Amino acid sequence: MSYIIGIDIGTTNTKAVAFTDTGLMLADASHSYTAFTDEEGAHELDPRQLWDAVLKVLLEVLSRTSDQKGLAGVSFSCAMHSLIAVDQQGELLTRAMTWADSRSKSYADRLKTSEAGRLIYQQTGTPIHPMSPLCKLLWLREKEPDIFLRAAKFISIKEYIWWKLFGKYQVDYSLASATGLFDIYHFTWYKESLELAGIREDHLSEPVACVHIEKGHRLEGIPGGLPFIIGGSDGCLANLGSNAVKPGETALTIGTSGAIRMTTQSPTYDPEERIFRYILTRDLYVCGGATNNGGGAVQWFVSNFGGGSPVEDMVRSAFDVAGSDGLVFLPYLLGERAPIWNADARALFFGIKASHGQAHFMRAVLEGISFSLHQVGASLEETIGPIRHIYASGGFTHSPQWLQMMADIFGRTVYTTSSADASAIGACIMGAYALGIIPGLYAAAATMIRIKDSYEPKQDVYGTSYATYTELYRRLKDLM
Image (cartoon, rainbow, N blue to C red; front, side, top):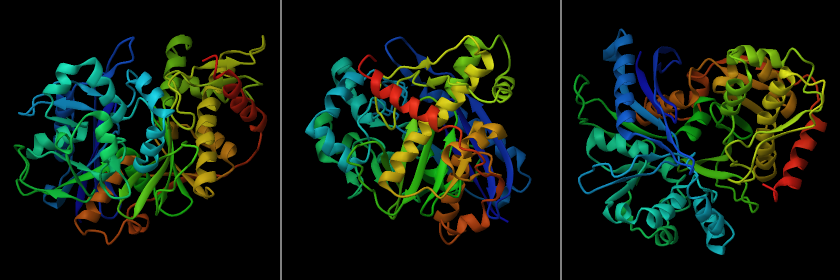
């Protein structure tokens, strides 16, 4: 029996799992860190803390596995849209700007309404939004010109980790395709985006396939010849780790943020620019949309209005009432990505009555998050094709009631798997494929992914609330 260690570097923590070629999880570990934020919209992570987190979870998982000789390799997943500037020696010039950093909003607004922005979305698959490293570069060039001119490379979080491991600047196609700088049809950096950002190709890393392998790492206590697989982005690998790789099979994730994604064999273009199109392999693309406001919106409500109650108790209380009783929540606390791509979008409760209590508000928050993902799902179906089944992952899967509500809202069966973390498991599967342990990515469903529970749609009671939800934004967006 051989196993892969998959490491998923996220916005709030880094997770690692040891996963066998038969689908057995041997060990897992997690390490958290804190973001640096300010009122201007900054949202940054310290790359040195991220490097420490990667080392800690790797060593912790290794210490918990009894058969270290069975370790076949280490593979990576990472959050998308980050940007770090480094100098000629690889020294940090900035922290890592994350997907949640909104300081480039005005640059994104101008670009989005231009012909250049339309062509960039069409060719790169990345929607024009402050999350995009392209827009971050525009901001950095104007607001931090000294740093911009001193920078030898502009890289992502995973590229920084990879450079620390091997002294090489390489980026997988999957992460590159989420930058707004990469041509997803020709697998090269997109010249028009680079010219707009004021950078050259040598400011960026060498693009490589997600199955790219390096050996000869710089770590102590780890076998020197151990293969490291570069892997992909967390969203694309979550599809792989959720068994959502065949037509119509859809991955739905709710953690701090949320996303819904389908895997396709071509980067289908959405003329309304609602969905992203990212690379998994040269033959598979992951299309979908992400919401800024997933579990983070739940945490916001509980922290401010929960009276000290645990999150789990508050979520359970939401299902003690029959429904939200006409109360509708737009969850745009952090602006919004898909499908509206509006950093100015704002949250609100609508339809408040004297009979509404804390549980109704909590229920409306859960419904609002679910409606936002349903809205993205509708965009996917219009562009790609029908959703057949939904594979759920992320923290919300700890709530059976929320999973059932999601099945009812979508009118589709929702499945959960036994996997601890879909993105980390996806990294393991990609690693196993790169090393020839499994013959193909489709084979993983039969050998490595196990269905845990399923939730059939039972009742269609959300239509009126969902219609109100979509109409509210349409009518209020100009005020926002």
